[in-house]
Image (cartoon, rainbow, N blue to C red; front, side, top):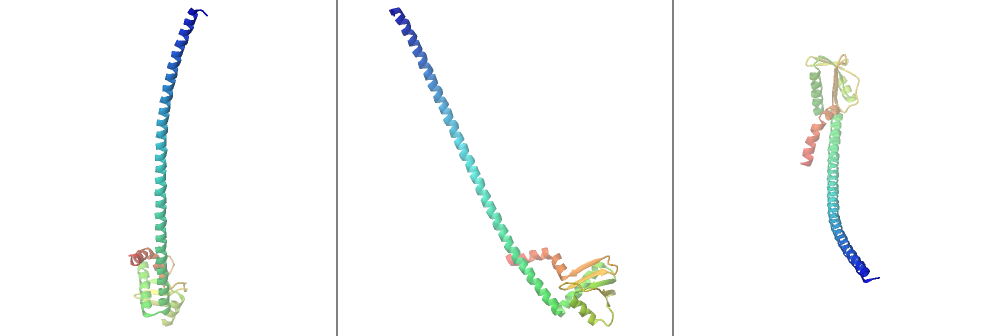
Length: 203
């Protein structure tokens, strides 16, 4: 190869080397930029994941605490309900015993319950249903028949009912009926009594 040719080849090689160096530098710069961006993105994603993880962790914590509080509240209410129900059962038992004794206090209460029911119906001719013991007690006091009169109202004894005490009154045609037995009264006033019992027991 002549010296002229050597120079041309050398010049071409030199230019090629320069271009190659520039390309490599640009490539390295691009790699660095891409790597930096990737690292930045990865860090951002890492932070995001950690933040999301913390949020989820916090949410789960709050959920567990909330569930625990709710369960504790339910347990407390359940315990209160048990105590209140026991108090009602005890009161019902005592009322049953008092009605069975048929003492003066019960007789007075029974008269008041009958009058209340009669006033509510507003009729002067009523059929009265009592439990078997009270029916027999009334019959013993009646001179004859199954009817008696109080304050201008005629009462006729009907068939005995299953009840602790109290009475069911209805018009002679059966159109109007008022249940004023002890059980019915307890049921009617249960929500009010429940609040009062709870206040006494858990104040």
